[in-house]
Image (cartoon, rainbow, N blue to C red):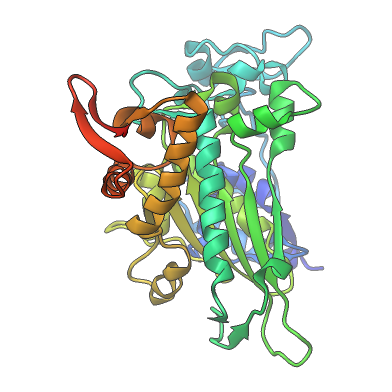
Length: 404
């Protein structure tokens, strides 16, 4: 192999350019950096890397074949280019990792290897009373189950589907035959320091559950496999340690999920329709990675079409200017208000039965159940119209339903 044909792993490229691996992925997805995919992993050719180094004003023009010595903070993993950025060594005995001044100012004195679970939770992700949202772990789990069941029910009703790459019609007799499911309970076990979870714990803790449908073409069908995947994503570290999260998922959370989705694509030309749902919602910056904005284009990948679902606003996020994204959004669009009200009615009655209550306030229902106040209000009205309940306004408490 000639020097120009030499291949570099993305981690090596990131170190040479002095950027994060996420940045390298973004440049590949934006078609700014040519990459070859071998065995499911991306590699960069020497000649393409050299062009980037030559063109970039932020990168030294030294040969890319020589990897510079990289000094990183052992806590945040940020590259340290100036000696003034180094505050001290890791405070654990015998460790030679360095700690940057920013981490030291936040009270972090140990590298990731020697940090406790609480320290590993990024400070920006820790819940507090001033966070823009407030989603308890049990509520996140309920939303997780509710959303996956809703989409599973919807997909079961689809008889035919056009393949996103070539439009060929796929006829599916039984979607359940194509279904796989899973979650990240192994991560939850590790975070809890346990070897087992009981049914109570799995009902009160989000598990980042997912479902996936894999359609493999028959021998006489000339198209690539199709994957439909729905994932629910929570910050498990925060949910386990604090029991709630008060921040929407941000661009860093999304980029990590996109990297994982890209790397996990089979090396057989499979096309994936992916929905990533967040019980705590998405920040505007995260939304714009997928939907695009006036200053940036939307996320694009040859074999991956991505949607976000915001469980706080009951909103599906995708690029409206991409005709293909618009066409397949119908698969994952939020349920109609009337459909959600039917589900909410059963949950409300179960909650009242469980608590032994003959009344329920709108405020308490919104706190305990994975539905918006708009859906719950519609459900209260429907339950009242049936004649078994009456709708009342309680002073200082607000709307409530009372069993007759």
